[in-house]
Amino acid sequence: MVPTVRRLFQFPDPVNETSARLVAAGVVLQAAVFLVFREGWLLVPLVYGFLARVLTGPTLSPLGQLVTRVITPRLGNEHRFVPGPPKRFAQGIGLAFTGGAAAAWALGAQAVGIVLIAALLIAATLEAVFALCLGCIAYRFLWECDDCDDISERLRLALQVQQAQQAGAAAQPAAPATN
Image 1: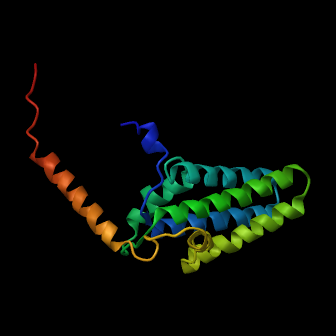
Image 2 (image 1 turned 90 degrees about the vertical axis):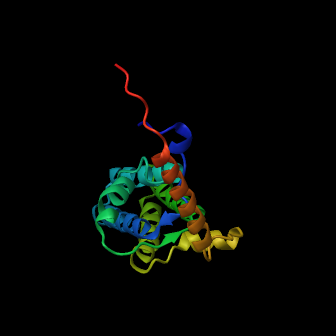
Image 3 (image 1 turned 45 degrees about the vertical axis):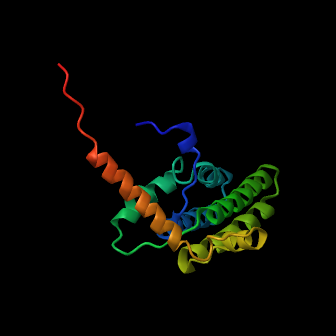
């Protein structure tokens, strides 16, 4: 089934923190590869990945799809969920850094691009290793986020709604067969 346009451009809320940290680990790897090889074309997948994740969460991001559909489901640990808006804001900051680095690189200011990607590498490493999201911290300073401290009540209500929908779907009579 093809997702509707509205659903396509929906960012997940809440976000599985395990998936967010694994995506950050992928960003660390991509940024490190860029810093080692210093080839401008290596910025393209970084910029695209952040743009895709800002617009659609993991839906149009190859890294997001790999993490949410393949890696995270295979992990046996219990997952923690965190609010989506701060994570989307953090992805936007990543887009600003990678887009700025790509623009600087294209304009011949390679040192600026290297500094921006090095800063991104540090921030992504903090997220991947320590679950410390600098973009999320900035978000909390800029906007009031009632859900940022404890989203357990919202998750409980969402689970109840999902269970009610599943129970309702199971109670629906099967459509009669036509010949």
